[in-house]
Length: 304
Picture 1 (spheres, rainbow, N blue to C red):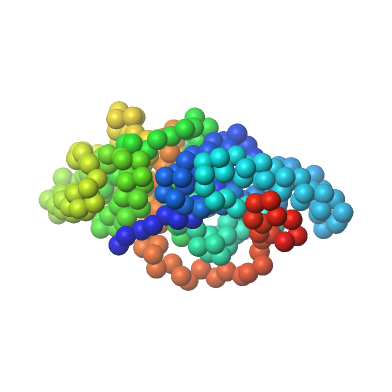
Picture 2: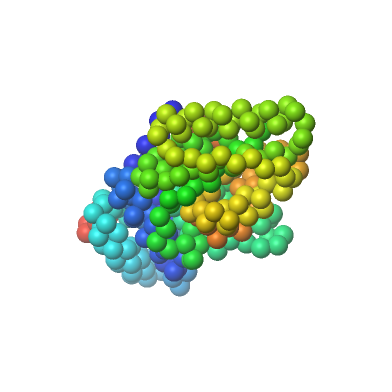
């Protein structure tokens, strides 16, 4: 199934990390001839000083300040010769982004994240982790160190289940844009012949797809129970620019545990990570209510 990335959403809290994400999203939008949406959510804004429902006048002033900040980011992004619009949400962050994706038919989310360490990652308490887990479109996460990324080297871990190939549809779009080489990393967790056969069949299928798409690739097979760490070690070894993972039913220690690989890699990788939800093409069940956001094209009035 051919996938086109034509609408990219970047949530921002105006932090340095999120600014890096906007810069990288702008560059990708230019390469893909895509439209960029830059979004801020008032509900949990670091600039929110008052409860807006208690002081309507201050709410208007506050909104104007935020819109001016978004305008400056929009103008900077437009230097990449792309179409840019800004969105201002007023609900909870995760819910607002979910609605924005549906309403604007977003194909990809790009966002900055600070990651997590220790047991904190298993609590799934951050907005970033909820967005990665729940998003119906792929999410690329950047850290502060990930500025000015050219995604020339991409890692695709393949495990013993067929949904792993769903990552290829999106990677082909990015690989063509950056003239990337894809590293197919076959991970065999068990020496049992059926499991080994599944991984090898997946690798053969992936090779065929990439060959037809004229994407250069490298094939590597490893045996390990520590899928996440092996992926990160290999990524560092080849100086990868992007890792693609699935956000649910990842295979770890011989059992299927939702999101463990994706969560671990997204939290601990200094390399950008693309998290993809399997079978997302059929995710029309999301219930969205309209009227959730102040939508503004560049240079238009806040009330429009």
